[in-house]
Amino acid sequence: MDSIRALVVRGSRNVFTVRGETGGTDTAELECRIKGKILKEMEGYYNPLAPGDRVRIDVDPLQPRRGRILGVEKRRNFLTRFNQKGQRSQILGANLDMMLCVTSPLAPPFRPRFLDRLLVQAEIACIKPVIICNKYDLYLGEDPDTEERLEDFCRIGYEVLRVSAKTGMGMDRLRLLGAGKTSILLGQSGVGKSSLINALNPVLHIKTGALSEKYNRGNHTTTLSQLIELPPFPGVLNPTYIIDTPGIRRMVPDGIKAEELILYMKEFAGLAGLCTYGLSCSHRSEPGCKIMEAVAAGEIHESRYESFLRITDELAVL
Ligand SMILES: Nc1nc2c(ncn2[C@@H]2O[C@H](COP(=O)(O)OP(=O)(O)OP(=O)(O)O)[C@@H](O)[C@H]2O)c(=O)[nH]1
Ligand SMILES: [Mg+2]
Ligand SMILES: [Zn+2]
Image 1 (cartoon, rainbow, N blue to C red):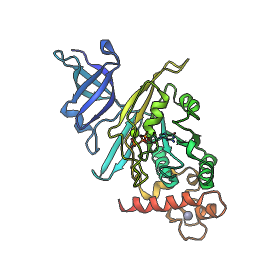
Image 2 (cartoon, rainbow, N blue to C red):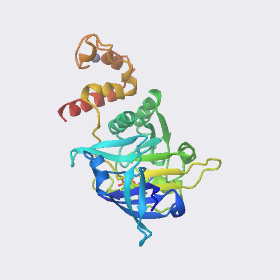
Image 3 (cartoon, rainbow, N blue to C red):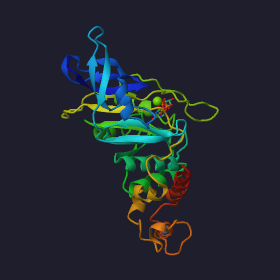
């Protein structure tokens, strides 16, 4: 029996829902179990496969909606985070063109340091990040700090979109950016990741959740990552996919050593090795430290420097 190529939509442990990409099963969803040996290839990871993975499956001749995953195709790239519960790298998505780092100005409050962490992980994985400030309808300008930080992210070279899933503001730009690509949404619970997908495809009704009054935080409405196909974009042949993920409370950068962090923060990277003490500089107190000079000159935002120090400390004890 011939095997077919399929795209992983969602799953956990060793049962995954996939969509056939070749043969008569095109786009039909199948439930598949992993054949033992490919689990071995993924040893050391918290999860063996993630949405966006391309796999080969064979279909059960007696149950056409069921199959077996025989192997996984080499990934073009993949995004991970350090899963503290499992003490291992967790694969969030594979074969990605864009990482949408979602935040909100209010409810939950804006957290630029959390964004710094998402951006570091995007740089590690070599996936283009875009900052999405959703719920912009709630931003009334009382908090100039939020705007100042968003503008600084722009200054250092990141695209920032101010959008509202509720009013539709900025959604055309987001639709255009993602057309024909595979994107993943990441952010804290309650920032509106699932709502953004619903706004991009009004036919969908993914579950979204109200904020808990008590904590003004999201309640983890989405519990399982899944890949969703969005309507075709006029003139774009490739399908458009977006991966919804559960809210992340903490983001611990994964896959680098403390001393490598400098290379994964955009406006720091060019200064690596230039301090008087070269690569051994801790960038905390040494004379002739180019990072500290850049902070003093306003070329590195103090808040980004603070993130740099904290993440360095965390990576040092991992
Ligand atoms: N005012 C306003 N509310 C929004 C907007 N987008 C989402 N919300 C509301 O914010 C709440 C949380 O939205 P969700 O889409 O469930 O958030 P999420 O990021 O998917 O949360 P998790 O699945 O828990 O990670 C819901 O009550 C939404 O209606 C927006 O643009 N403006
Ligand atoms: Mg959600
Ligand atoms: Zn230094």
